[in-house]
Length: 237
Image 1: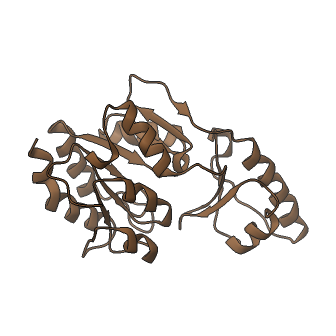
Image 2: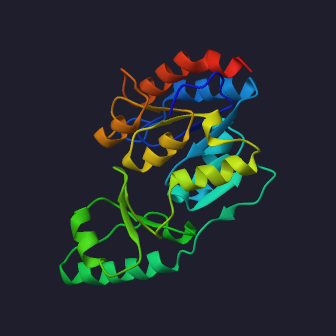
Image 3: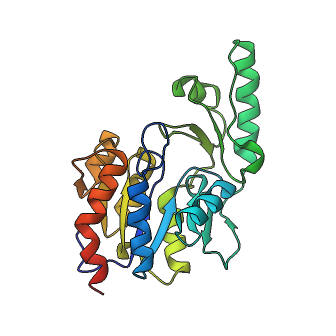
């Protein structure tokens, strides 16, 4: 990755990047994104959240309905486009039911996150070790992902980065046209494909290793710091 002469778009994670550790949205981050939208810049949200969450958050944040959800399982190129499901969610659900059964025998409960509203991945609370999930599901054709906010199970090949490439093409753009900002390991391939990748200060160490820059501030304050630094790059078009 290298700093581009100009930027045409922003792609950003939500939880831990434009929120705090308690998932409270940073109002300054919303204002910064709206300023980009008002300037004609494409703003893409990329998250592990469901389509219904992403639709609502996009509408309320004023970002145009362009997003990646379920950690790359779904994409939407804007309000005038239908949702695209990029993978089959059967294997994750089969794996989840085996996990639930195995954990019940151990006296462990699982708190599901929005299961009826997910098309590709499944997600649940981080109340059991990821290593245990991986051990129980070792024979299943799935990937176990800990985002720091939830544990996800999804099919191989699903990622924010792969969805980013697909979505950028639908928008008539390239991934290198974007500034990418994130905080988790699941943001690594997204940052690697972008023209410039920034990790907020609270980011996972592995993401920092793959970022072009790391902000001085954490969470939403770091996001605003990054956009303040790069805002002129978007205007130089």
